[in-house]
Image: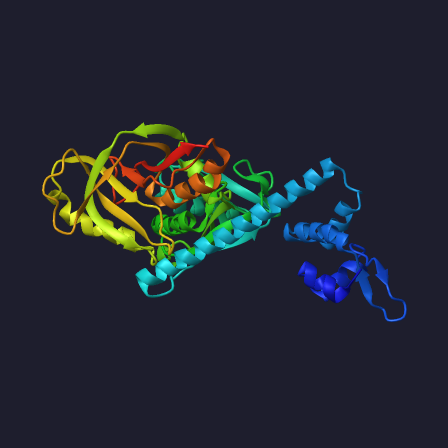
Length: 436
């Protein structure tokens, strides 16, 4: 048997952790010296310890680990626990990814404006609220002030003042420049119940509202909405219900509309988390093809290095752009040819164009001949090229009947429709393969 110190060193687990596992009943010592109190373990107990560590790494609590290891959990229950843990992790990753997107959006704003925005977009929950509302179809956003005025008149006829805030609810599922289905509402007073024009109902709560405050006349509200939707686009959220305007300050008749203060509220939910590979599959038709491509020749600018800054390859293509016309007999197809990395991680790369024949090679450029080869072809976009390579080498190849042919040349193929400014038109990653 091994003393706790030796067992600790063997297992790469601290003695303190072993004592905690003992206290929780997860891993009892094989024997305790009743005179010295030393704990002793058998080598075969490493298997149970490894199970504890594996489940702990998945995020299970020590209590859950005890239930799992002591046989009180069926395989069906274990599967349910694993799936719930998977959902928890996905929600956590989605929340952190959304937080990262918000930080990046704020950084972009600071870089562009050199200052904080006058009104931030914030996320907050909104509780359910019983309201009395006046609902109409408006010709345009400009008629919103008139609807608020009519709502105020209805209240005054019953001796009531317009409560603040008042909420405006837009029921149209899509934007309409005219014919807007709008309701203005407030918590009901007794004098409003039973009024034919007034509907008393519960306005549902929302777990998350993206909100920003706008000061000014109602015809400027579209700018506030633009602010929120721009923020949503870069922050990992998507609208999930009718948007609202919370009128925090409504000008009285005769007062300037510019005195209005409105909080724009849009119910949102996080976009579902997708791993880089899942995003690739979601964005592209992942129709992997095996093709045999005839020999071809590419003329372009060479590179040798590790792309350490991750900008060296894009800069190579930028240098090639002004010199495209120097390449004679172009086929119109662009290629990024790449050889297998050397032992030190450096690789050869050629950014260029296919040619039907080699004439005079322009100064500083090279001509590469690529022999006939069998390839696995992965469609992608410029924004998902790294994920395409990751999927090819880490997921597809290990599960396929092929292996990477290290003697061949990997390359990206850019069709004539490819737009280097947007990178949105499909391109292709070609990986040389042979059967296993």
